[in-house]
Amino acid sequence: MSQNPAALPTSRSTAAAQRPVDGSRLALSFAVLVAVPLLALNLRPAVTSLGSLLPDIQSHTGMSATLASAVVAAPVWCFAAGGVLAWALRVRLGTSRAVTCALAVLAVSLAARVVTGPFLLLAGTITACLAIAVLGTLLPVIVHNAPAREWATLTGWYVAALGSGSAVGALITPQITGHTSWQVGASSWALLAGAGWLVWRVAARRISDKPVEEARQTSPLTLTPAGTAWSLTIHFGLTSGVTFSIMGWLPSILLTRAHVPPTHVGWLFTIAMALGVPVALVVPRWARRAKRQSGLAVALAAPTVAGVAGLLFAPTLAPVLWAVGLGLGMPAVGLGLTVISLRACPATDTAAALSSMVQGFGYALAGVTALGTGLLHSATHSWEWPLAILLIVLCGQIGTGIHAGRAVVIHSPPRIPAQRRSPESTGTRRGRGPRVQAHNPGAMTMTKHPNSGVMTKYQIPRNQMVSAKIWLR
Image (cartoon, rainbow, N blue to C red; front, side, top):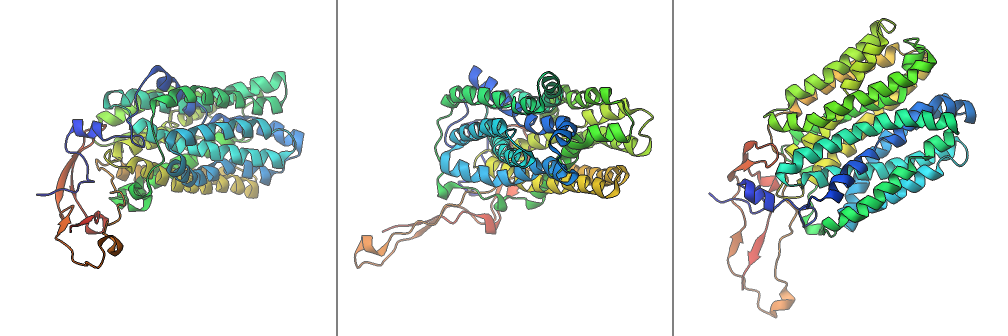
């Protein structure tokens, strides 16, 4: 039984040897172990810092409620567009150079967005979030190519740093603002982006990459099985929509619906953002040890359901408990990012294609949820209907998480065009020799994923096979 040469490896050793970052395995070093969490730490403060300062910004700049809703929802839409942008930059520049450029743009945007009025704030936030989207799309690709033994550790630090960025942005920004101004508090995160740029310049020496050849690109639209890829995409989109809605509007919900004193709102918001950090550290290990991640997806969604339902039906009964539930459900986004690495085939460029698809389309869906939540609140002047919609979204999150958690390996062969001898190179001779097929249509192959250890039986589909014909003289 023949196998597709672009198919998945049949042993763990072969898989480890064929897991490149644009042609070279990620060599772990102290700089890499510091750089990856530091890059992940830059993915959320630009968003949560605005959420914690939104009342101050509205009062000092005269920002309207509609523009405030746009500022809250803009990051999610930028993350969707940034997934496509990251794919293009990676093909043209390579992984390490794309990350370097994104960090530089992030630092400049965060420093410049507070110079004048609310419209520059919106424009700077959009630019910063596009840079964050590039980083967020490429980080799973980098982590995916770590050695198998260190993958869980690096992924745990990456996911935990992602959650820590949310908590740090919500906690430190108001403290800085209280001693200075909201401009200084919102722009101070440019220093973190600058530090990430410096550390990444050192860590990038461990990655000898180059732009991806066009013939070796893997299209996100050719991922197979498509049902699992789209379930993971929708699950990530619904989870991110709930998360960004909570990050953007939880202070307002606690203040106006739960009647929490203004002096306690900031601390409850910080607690909600910080509680997910220790859970995020162990989520990758739990996900890797489990054959299916469906149960873990349900378990992470349950506290969020309890928190949203509590704020909807009994907001003043136990607001601290509702905030705790929302915080414990925050690592659900980290689970979606972890499953990208667990599901992606290691032999080809599938991880980059799957990450671009999940975060591109997923964040677009999240943008609809976040924007709809704010606009519905502006239209009804209450939080009952937005919270009810979030409960419906959480039901969809659970359903898609159950389907995406199945033990299935997602793959897609690279597009290698058929190579044919040109007539000019052979003069007037037009004869041709025998054809050599590089694969057997409908062949069966067994796959063992190096991170999850899942054995999957896979039949090479006819419409996804590489058509590589060799013409002999």
